[in-house]
Amino acid sequence: MGDNIEVGVYPISQAIIKANELELDLVEISPKANPPVCKIIDYKKFLYEQKKRDKAMKAKATKVIVKEIRFGPQTDDHDYEFKKRHAEKFLKDGAKLKAYVFFKGRSIVYKDQGEILLLRLAQELEELGKVEQMPRLEGKRMTMFIAPKTKK
Image (cartoon, rainbow, N blue to C red; front, side, top):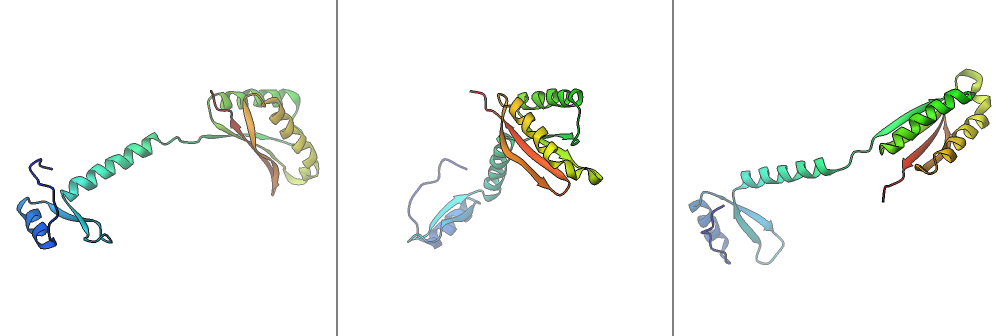
């Protein structure tokens, strides 16, 4: 936009004439004001700048990564430790953790074992993350979310 545009209060007809002279657009900023507030700008350039700002804001937004770990209701100690080490790595990297116990067939009768397994995991990962959602049974899955603790 040129620097030689004078700022002032103009009647709408004079503002339209001035915008046409400068080959720019007259954009109504605040229509409810008395008198309505308008601005002479290059509208295409304005849209381009706005799109650029929106893209920059989107790039700065943090993306939440959710990693999943699946257990069975009767997971043995070695497998549990192996998966716990992976969970520790995920939390250290700043990802949320979704740990779940999947009950196949008739194994749903062991839902108390599944809950104990998830609570044990939450207790052992206490220094790395905090439980966002306690174990909850949804169909054949018992799910728990752990969010990483923020670094200070």
